[in-house]
Amino acid sequence: MEHTMILTQRIHAPAGAVWSVISDIPGSAATLSGIESVQMLSDGPYAVGTRWKETRSMMGRSETVEMWVSASEPPAPGRGGSTTVKAFQGGADYTSRFILAERDGGTDLTLTFGAELVEPTRFNKIMMAVFGGIGMRITGKALSRDLKEIAARAESL
Image (cartoon, rainbow, N blue to C red; front, side):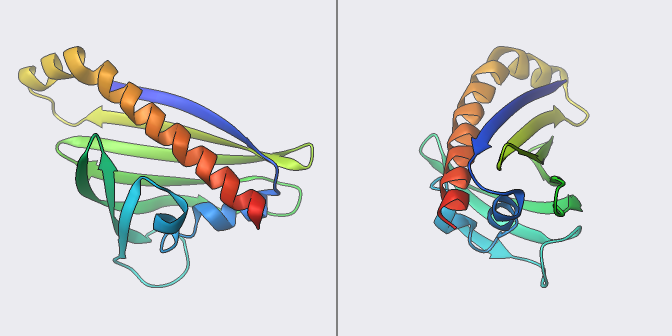
């Protein structure tokens, strides 16, 4: 049972500036108001295998999730880029894919977010059917705010 959403944010900045914001994991708590803290678990630049723990506040609760980069294609001149971030928490596999597309002197940043239960029990399936839509609406609002804050940061560079 999978839930997916797609959000796009128009950013008045080149793809390189947008990439510098989304790939700055150590600085993400300063950019995104929903992130309380980040603890890096790997060294080096942003690339496949980069790992960190991210503590977010959602619905009045703080939760820490380990995340990692599973795909990374930085933008090149005249071409967009993409990256995929994964997390596994509470029996759910989370995937966030960011696609940067240059257009009219700016960048369209599209986020595809998916949550899939791994080996769900009958109870999990019932709970997802009852509460999954509510959870995705709350998540959608948080992700929309993240995209707006990424845009504001990239446009200020």
